[in-house]
View 1 (cartoon, rainbow, N blue to C red):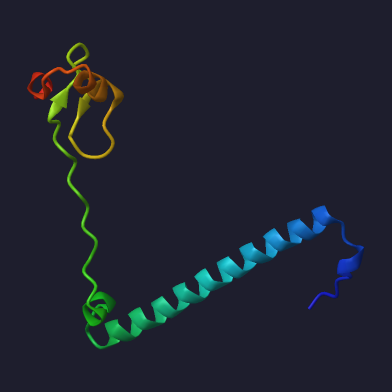
View 2: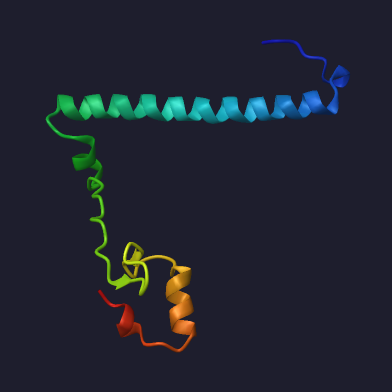
Length: 105
């Protein structure tokens, strides 16, 4: 292990050393987890299973793209599915007291 004289380092150098150490620790843990996962996966395959079968984790499914439910009254290219944050044009329309059905696709 390298022998450091921490007393001789400037504050800037100490903070950089702190960042470098945090990054090294994080990547070390990630590498160790990946290695353990690979070993477990190999053992499971040896026995004729997948790791997901053994631990009861289902494969991640992707969510289908949402269908547009609302369209901007003046610019048909702007749509919103009703999921997530409301677009400003939608909020402006509703705040103006107009009917939601006017925007329905």
